[in-house]
Length: 89
Image (cartoon, rainbow, N blue to C red; front, side, top):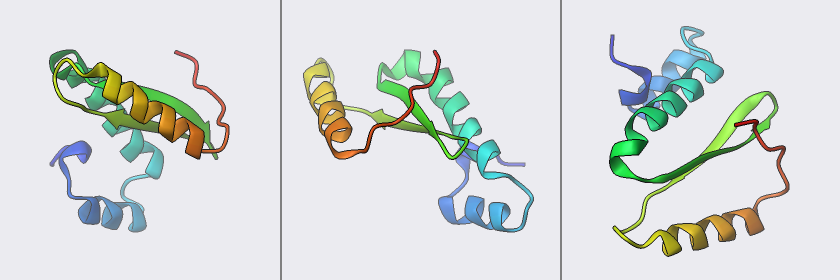
């Protein structure tokens, strides 16, 4: 079977609708993949909250050596999103 993080969104949605995969399983599979590859791609990927019992995360990838652009994007997202409950690291 294809890993959940490899699937097209439409295929994954079909599995969720059919009850073969839960939303939590899909999200957690993607978060595990981010954790696995982040050391190689050096992206800024931080789980930011849980909402309705589901983890929420944002991954921002910018040009090499331009962490400032990623952090500016994070600041803009934080300003636009209502306050969330932080996830324990």
